[in-house]
Image (tube, rainbow over all chains, first blue to last red):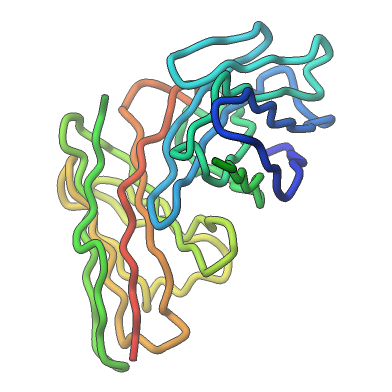
Length: 113
Length: 118
């Protein structure tokens, strides 16, 4: 899988928006951009994914650059429960889901009350 | 949404004994499940891919004779850590995908099993 680069940590205040960046300059045309997060002492959970267009769901928004070499996960109004490690992962759609995910180090998001 | 359940959530065992961890997909049939390991302050590392009715595929550096994987049904995969040693202490996490969904949709993860070998 192509590599992604994320900041090691970010800090934000409660009830403010959070923008988590991810660089993926070697992304291929068949790579989807997935975001997962891992709360302390839990397994990861899916957040959102996209290919080219920006995506919104109940948890977050995903903004994808026009050249697809970077993306930003947006939490519109962070709460203390959003404190987690956020992983940006590229998934080749041609793989058919037969292989596991390659996790980088992710971004440790700290939310201040 | 789909749920993947792991059991036990934490286990302490003596060095030299074996420990079995179960991973169940509760509301879908999973032909493929994945096992990950996560050491403190580190990211998840894929250990093996568990295939229903066939042998598991192990990642490089993972001892297949030490980490036995059985995927006897479409809803259950087990990971057995044999002759556990303190260096096997880690957070073990399983994952499953709904069949037929390809590489686009989400993976579902269990809550993880904290193994401590004393």
